[in-house]
Length: 205
Image (cartoon, rainbow, N blue to C red; front, side, top):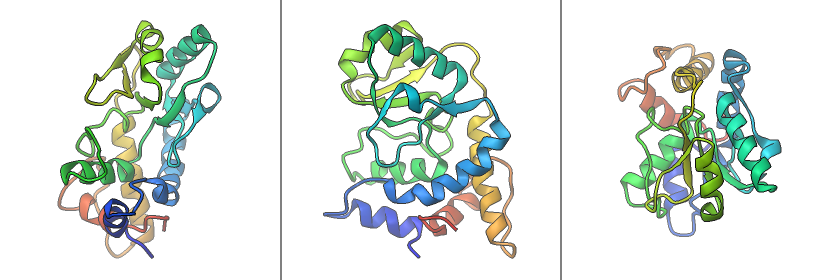
């Protein structure tokens, strides 16, 4: 079993690959607990994009999807999607790489604060040709420091996607560790949640 801690170190080492694709098993378990709670609030955008990321979860909030659909219709083509919704596991690893100057990560929000965890952000290729259409439909470009990143700033955003995503991991941990329960409070705590995430199996429990 490879833990998230071991995975993060190995992937950021020379020849490691710097991809979060190896977290897919754990990511899927988190998403499987999250989606029934969110129902129609966090939905697929797979039909609107061409998925090019090995770890891509093509999920975004419903109003963000509607706005993306309008931009796609206007352009008459699909963007190449690298990231949309991110689990706490993905965000945690990316933040560790960013904090330690690994993998050339230009920017990464602290776990528990990212718009990706809220389901309102996308990372795409060829951002320049998409910028005008996306901005017209309430997608804000982050800027040259992180050029592929756009955040949806329109109406109707749900505020609890991030909290429930964190809670989904906490529930997952508790389900598989009955003798080491942690609070299911939806908060990324450095005392309880962070250490358990580091020791979780990267390919799932």
